[in-house]
Length: 136
Image (cartoon, rainbow, N blue to C red; front, top):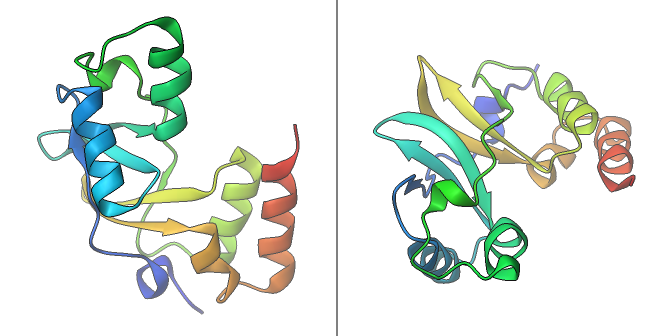
């Protein structure tokens, strides 16, 4: 049985909750990614996406100097590296999310995207998750 540890990315780029939106956007551009886990020390406190920055802040006239904490989502779904890939795919579908942050002993150790699971979980699991994610 494959676990999340077998498929997750271990090189997670994160940003502090007190960083500016400009810092977050620059980091996303540099790394060519659309989301960043938000940390307070080693603790995961949220996630911010490029869409969060635009919809929650820029569209409302917030300056680029606004804090990441102003745009982030605080309720982050996580899993352990020992989690089964099938369970993770179902969780992603149920929560309608495309990535899970991986936590072990209270520390962020990785990230797994739906695409990572598509090659490891049965096609049905990944397809069901994507269908649920794509629903309005």
